[in-house]
Length: 72
Image (cartoon, rainbow, N blue to C red; front, side, top):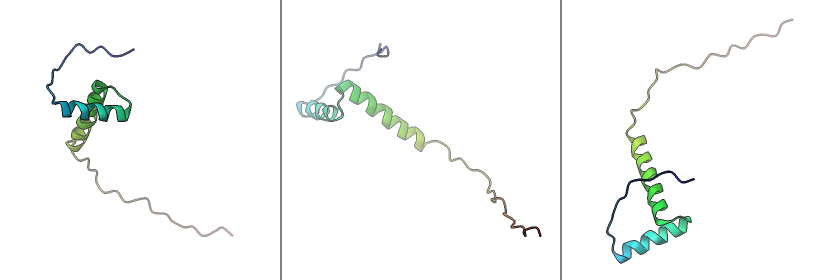
């Protein structure tokens, strides 16, 4: 079942832009609307990831491995 989409957005495109959009969508096997939705989500995710604060943790030394002598 498709999610409810109560919002509309009207956009004017040239004939060339419409053809480009259709070609890109067809290449992905999507409708033009689905292609634009995925493009929006992908671009937003990239921007959101780029603006996340860099996570830093104090430098932690790895545990030291001590070789023990075999028991006699």
